Image (tube, rainbow, N blue to C red; front, side, top):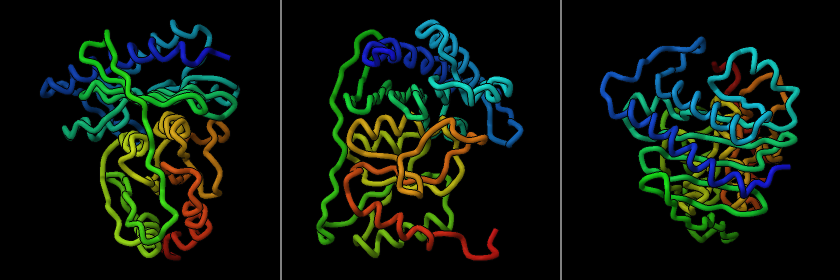
Length: 292
């Protein structure tokens, strides 16, 4: 078992360095080197440069500990089911946002042990902000100007009042994904709690917003992968939140043949009965029979 706190400082430095590589491409017009993967998702030089830097840096930080990255080889991805402990990394989460120039992209690093994320770092390169969570220990936001000195601020999620008349919810949602299930979920929440405030953003920034008290729930009913979610789950669990599957249980990792994440609710206040009530009604969110 690693001393998880001892990993935080070198992880911050590693993220800063990878983030600077990403920003060099972001600020160089025409330098993205855009191509497509087999699933038609975009791939840029920034993805690859960040992957290589994080891969090599994590190998030095924790020798012998395997790494599963979005940009890992098929052979590495095939081996991962035998790993009880490993790094789970998205070197550039939000490549579409990177290409579109919205600035809403992150670096996601999670340490997974026995199928649970025990440490998560989400780094926002353009803002030089890092969100770090160790469940059961601490959650904090770190900022820097040069990667040398980091200012730390403790994070606190937003508790959810049990009073139905206390006002609406702030829902965080993907900027690019909307479907029947999400619309039905939002309609259920609005009927239960009143008018919703909806904030859209790309990448894993939604987990960061929940962790710093700027939202209540992030429902996800569209495809994403385990490396998109694990670091955010560690962060939320560290502030008293959770990432719940539609069975009401926290998500687990590296348990299935697929690397796609199950649909989930990411919530700031895991103790609120509202989420279990919502999940008990989630069958009504299924697409209509015969729909694509």
